[in-house]
Length: 411
Image 1 (cartoon, rainbow, N blue to C red):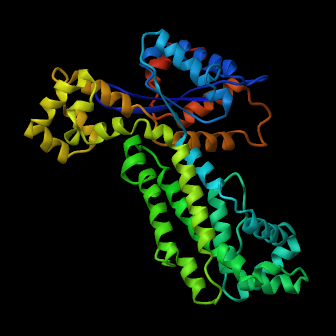
Image 2: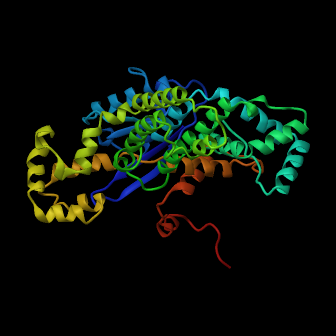
Image 3: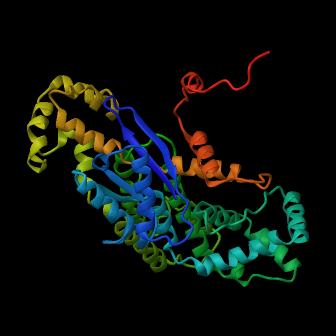
């Protein structure tokens, strides 16, 4: 189990670090997970009451109402005098699950079967590469169910090479009847475009130093849900402005575009997005206040914020600062004595993870570290290597060395 921490100090310096790694060797109940979190919190002398948000992935052992790890952590925070923390599910994991909700088996199974036939057998793959090199094309990529991005790439490349693949399969006496079925090809073209849109969202959700308000409101989740509504409206009238593969295929076939199938698929995806991101909808007002304090209705604010927000909204100097600086710099510039509660409010939302960049970085380091050439690697050693490999904190070597004895005397 990997435990990450994100914090903001009084100078609005945001730090994300791998706090601890805890090995769970037997059961993985909510109590077992909480035990690892509690151990890390106590070892680092951290206070539960300062925890503002819990971001997690996982099943009922994490999210169970009473015995899940999240419930136990929330209870520990409240017992320490803190307010109940926000609970959010990993946003990229949510988006990936939304993508996987699509029942693409009718299209994906023949595609994967064909790709595996070509790539899994050395002779087939060599012959196929030689064949496509002669006509100036590139190879087919593999598909893996773990990485959602690979699905879109495989579908797109398969569609582009469908004529070449059909010839090659016929030569191998393994014809794929779907390649002669225009109704199936319409669905393939539709999924190529749809997965491309989902993959673009996935990529925008990644990256370093992103904040929650930008992920939710400015460019990503909120806009994608509106795009799904637009797609439904346009495809009803066979407008392929944002479905370029479908537009290209429409010029090569007289078979009608499957409107009902496309609308049903987009509707299912929209419903799934709305359901899975409902926890973000629950804090939509907080994010809106945080992002646009000058457009906030004073009446909806907590009592401790109302007086400070009126002072803020009536200051032209502060408004000018807001319009000409980043959100982080804006809140940093507010006088602490005058806007103490607003600072606490801002600190809470700046401390929420906006990206899984550090998680992905850790797994990359782990894959590199746990290679076949290592004869021994203990849990403690691995944890130390991962913390050093992902941390942005520069070690104070002089302080560390000064506290050590010099065992080897110079000659």
